Length: 384
Ligand code: GLA
Image (tube, helix red, strand yellow):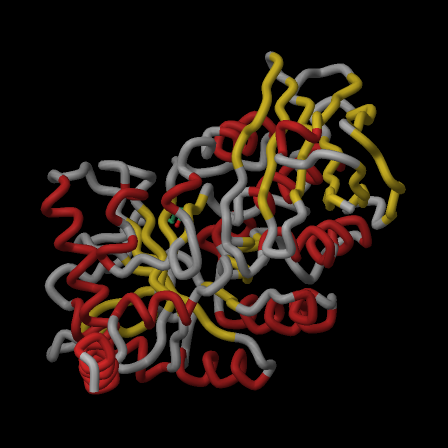
């Protein structure tokens, strides 16, 4: 046997003998950005067992599950007190967490929960400090599939922060149950640089979103430059969706969805799924747009051109095509153009409008369109 072959065989045997590494688990858990629903943006502290069941039902009946949404995530305010052995119990709003998980699973969906590395959560409920192993085991026993781990208290330094997240990551691994790990600490200490190394499948890069165009736009457009830190298994998270909550115009919500898709951001709906207009359902379930977010190449898009409030963003796709967002952040409509030379395409290319779901034909050198105020034109361009 030649030396090279022997070394590769040894390497192979060694890899097979090792337990699945945490980074392998990371990649298989969130190979594409997680999709689901979270209680916080719409329900806040009003969330309870009944509402979670209704949202799970609506995720199926609305077609969202079929479009790829999977996780039903209970945010803050579920936790009660610890028993004499230190095990956490839900408060009266959640009489039986295991039964709730069984219900969500029976719909073909997965259940997520929320805690904090501190003694108290952001809303003042019991956090996991000093009980990480016990809490992880409790979540696994209940059948939890996703944990959002949120640290609101003033940061105590990079080392302390990394150690706290690592501790819960290891506790989750020890349970043997695949549990998506969502870091929430608003981007402190450039979390994108180390979030993956402490087991994060996604990490918040910004402060809280709100149901206003300017808040959403600040979070989303600020992601430019972070693209190199995202990839299969580990994603930048500019916060959950506000689509359908009523505070933005249709064009503004279309911008929200388009930008999150170009960013390969987690698509975690934050509205009441039982009360959706047909327009909200269409926005959340547009297959062409979801395919941009969920593209297997896992590249986060970035800005390729800017003229004041007119921004052109591009996301490279696995099939070689380029998705381009013409974003108009000003308050009047304007014509915008993408030059094919800026997206690495020379010669003729086909253009498909992803919101109109329409092939527009073949174009050479550039594509131009009128873009409404605070709106977007989202196209997929493929060299012929
Ligand atoms: C923080 C998070 C929110 C939500 C609340 C809950 O503000 O950023 O997404 O989880 O805490 O208290």
